[in-house]
Amino acid sequence: MTESKNLRQKENYFMKLKNKIKAPFEGGKNSRFKIGINKFAKAILTMIAILPVAGLFIVVGKVIGPLGFGQITTIAKGANHIGQIIETIGWMPFRHIGLLFAIAIGGSWAKNRAGGCFAGAVAYLTLLSVGATFFVTRTGTDGTEFMNYILGGKWTDQKDYFSNQEGVYSLRFDALGGIITGFIGAGVYNKFFAFNRLPNALSFFNGPRFVPLMVIVICLPIAITLSLFWPLIQTGINVIGKSIALNNKIPFIIPFGYGFLERLLLPFGLHHMITIPMNYTSLGGVLDYTSVNTFSDNLFENQTLTKEELVAFFDYAVANNLVDKKSLVSEGQEQMWYTWVTALNLVKNNWTEYANNIVPNPTGVNNVYSIVMNAFEPVRFKVGQMITSTGSLIGAGIGMMYAINKTKRVKYKSIYISGGLACLLTGVTEPIEFIFMYTAPLLYLAHAVMTGIAFGMADLIPMRIHAFGAIEIIMKYFLVLGPTTLITDNIKTNLWLDGCFFILVSGLFLAIYFGIFYGLAKKLKPNIPGMGEEVAFVNAPLADQKSGSGGVNDQLIHKIVSLLGTAANIEEVDCCMTRLRVVVKDDKKVVDKFKDETNALGVIKQGNYYQIVYGPKVSIYKEKIDEYLSNQITEGNE
Image (tube, rainbow, N blue to C red; front, top):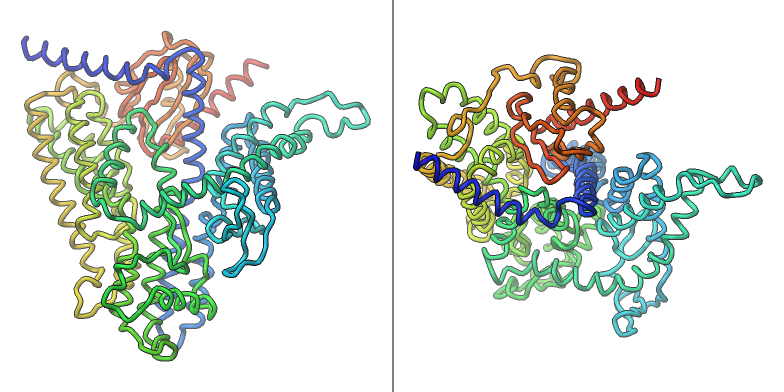
């Protein structure tokens, strides 16, 4: 009895703490904020969904080209050309990231997807047009300069503020500009898509045809204001980005804080607020191997090589079509790893010949390779996630499974095994985390701290593989990182060792997590499957029965809708990578038996806003529910 009472007290304390944290997002007008966060997450995921595919094309292009067949003399020309075509396709979403964000957010936020996509694109292109023509320019001593009105009215080099985007040389609005204009385009569409006030002579332009005009009219003053202040914003972004990417004076602390905060925000679905800027915008860093600013002075101590000579090599590579310049310039953690690998491969294969022919006192390739390799740490904000998915949470799942009484373990072990496999292979961590996220707050806090430590390890041990899940880790390690390595008498330039270190660290975290979760689960007895309250479990859940849509049948969809209070009670349905996000009209009509009757991994309730965790198949659930609701509306109208 005492043990049960203590358990209830712990759960009540956590629920009170959770409600305090959720309070600002609850009820009334603030429910719109929750819906907005929901739509924003969906829009972000719409864009991010293409990036793993893009990464695969980049890897295949490099393997066919410079890292593989391109090194065979007899077929080098043809192989490199084919590889370049494939790799260029892979770079496409990164080079058009602003426009794609504008389209994704416009389509997700507007009442009509196609109209919202078009409006978002028009808004973004309007912003670029203003950013390209707003400033007075002149030819300076080191290139083109622009009159920086907001920063003291002085002439400023364009290189750190402008770039080629969608056919124009404009301010570097990129992902942030796309996000802003996506919202503008969708908002204008929602306001004017039903406009019907033009006279009969102009009635053709009523309705949705009126939207593009209003997008330009409304976006124009916003674009002028943004262009005026953007150099100030970009200056801040450049400083922060350079500090994050190239400044490692405070090792461990910054990546630890990032990883710890990202895990704490996950239960509330707000982790995208820091992961998106870090991975896909210049706030996550700017890397430019054609700029001397990329290299710190200490890298050239006791070297005969200078910054200018190294940058001249990369300029030479671009001029002689050894590499596309865009492949040497990138921003955001996701893209910068590929740029880093590209630069290393260029040095490995081309420096010796270049130095012997052009540099008066050539420096050995080993020294140059080390400088380029150490100028940037490519996984400070990624390797922690990889350790967590391939080591930490596997240990957590095994620990919790073995903490269960033997008589129940057979019945519940499939939950832990399937969740662990999904986590290991795909990098999606929620299937394991939602087992203990809300029922064992102490376990989750320990997990957040350990995740921060895993991220901090990137500054202490070389594990320079940038991937998402074991499948991608294996591909990038054996097909990209390994062939990029320079095997010499200097062991520090052997990138094959990074994989060995990664396996050792992941194994260490697996063992630590096993000990923590096994011990605490035995002592605290949290309400996880097989421990605490009896959880209904069906060996052949509805979601796994064969049907025409990836194992999702109509019976399951009907059950989910029924538990949500029937179709009439559903106001909005969306999803992210693993969660079905639903806004209901009356939360009292919802029957919270999603775990028991639909095998949901977890349920998060915030007023009339529900997040129901089903794992990677959730996008199919969402589409089937949309279809079901649409059929209900059609039948009602008839």
